[in-house]
Length: 140
Image (cartoon, rainbow, N blue to C red):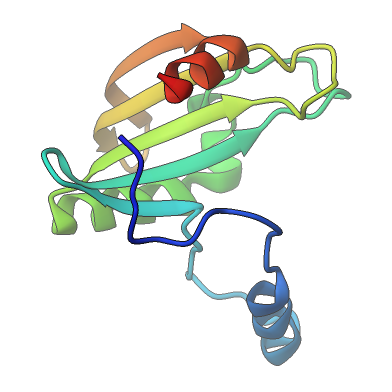
């Protein structure tokens, strides 16, 4: 189902991010940015956070998980989960690799159901998929 009341995604606009970085001048905040927030007509709010696996990492999109680096980046996931809970939204973390790289066709989707702030994601639904399946599925 394609939305007819929204402009298509084209070139990314990084100017807002660059503006905030300039204004804060390295001052750490507990703010997070959303990769994608949308309201589905039947499923309500959905939050997507895209987690890129770089080629120089030992993990791939199918083997990486936020719990592996929880202590390094837990505040981001805790904040996303809190916002999702407050909005009664579904939170999806999507592991992927850049197009044209070795693991570009691996995509892992993690639906976050529960988080323990000290331990990480404690309840989830996950599934492996591929770019090809997602692109073909979206075209139907």
